[in-house]
Image 1 (cartoon, rainbow, N blue to C red):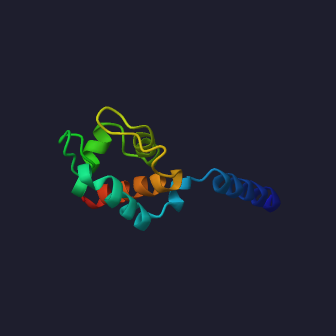
Image 2: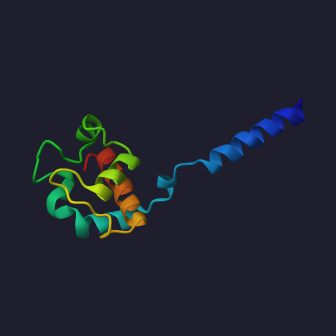
Length: 110
């Protein structure tokens, strides 16, 4: 019985590690630098100079379905409406770092 339980726990551990979220490896310090150089002109302090209600505060991110690394990565990569796409200007790891930084700042209240 102990061997079966050990095998099950090992399997769960391997499965969890194999499918863990890659955003956890994001570098928020680098994200802050990339954000400052590429995003702050419109989003300084988590604001939105083009559409004030669509800012980067936690409640707005939740309201517009953007309160996840995946959603922010998609928005930054592909752009939408007035926001330009950064696919070609930024590397995917830079975009992941920005997403982690935005979420971190949103949780802190900017």
